[in-house]
Length: 502
Image (cartoon, rainbow, N blue to C red; front, side, top):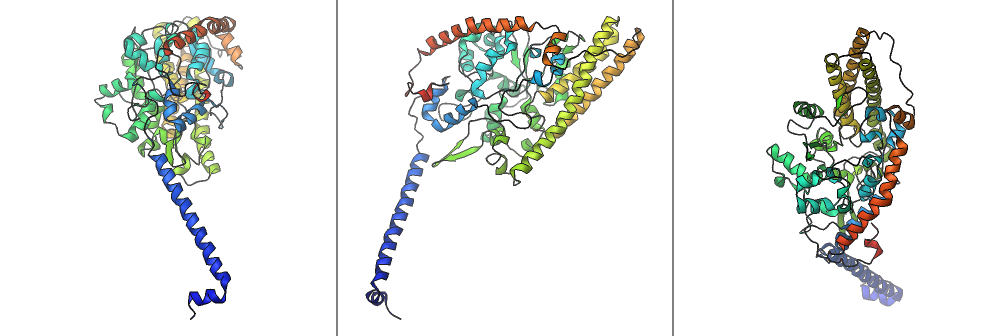
């Protein structure tokens, strides 16, 4: 066999080929090494460039240090994703489903109820909601809308904050839900900043400080995405979990303290308004049983350069199943979507059955009162209506149309249908006893406007109140907030549009 030297001497082009190949190889290895070093430097770049106070409501100040997270948070302003039933687009639920106007007659939700948009819209949306034309609402209503809330609670105490008036507190609340609501600036660990969750855990004998990091990836969401009520004259925000998390447990809790959010003006039923018991419903589902957190699906991890970070564009997992669902599920996108929608469609079918029965029950109860029914005759009927609507609302007001626990959602709605129809059966007997033998005529509530007119809402007057608030209150609130924040330490890059567009 000839040596390499002899081969090159006989064929010089082989030598040149080896020489150029060696140079290309060394160059490629050099590029790879440089890339590794660069990525490692990005990974270890954790030192804060902008000091953050323990209470810092300005999200842009946090964004100086954490631009990837902040940029993704700003995308919660986007409202362009629509799933089959929900998404981040604005949906007027009263227009879509006028039955809700009847179910919430006498309560602010009959004026306005829209699909919640992204976190960065939180303050803007509560300002513009027609629900806040009820100007006697307590300051408690701001609790889950703003990073300013921990600051105000720290200054005046939780009781004083809850007991304040929503309009009086408006000048204090201007920064939307954001960084400090869930993060400790000293190390960025997750933290709970709202007292109600900590207090609910304590009443159950639990120390929330013992929660694991994975548990905290759900609990920071459970500060707000839960059922709650305003307790006592001070409207103290309280989670009704002392008997358990289920709809039945919380119903028993409310009955035991004889609590009602309002009295329905048609049926005269003492009602309970469910808020958004996402955490409670999730706790009965398979994802909770498998240890999957809210963040795993709604804030999946992303990778950019050498950094792995959490996507803070909190949104429906259906907007990007590759990043959310496909981490665990191997089905393709179409199969996953079909699976979700099939479960939601079944829950929606049960919701509509309950709504039809409840609307009829409220109107038939009104007829019974008008026919001369007594409080004693109506008491068992009103209890059935109260429980049926609470159970309907417990599923309806939770995000996802029951997907967080389809089996439990269907069970609860099954009992809601049974109770609503039992109320109607009982009402038939009451009506007959008072000489009403024909079916009670149902009004035309085919549109939101017709339903609101039927329950006596003066929508022109309500819109007038909102226009007055926009012209007089909101500019004054913004001016007061600007003066307050001018006293805070200036943020680096504070002049950059990037940090001032929210």
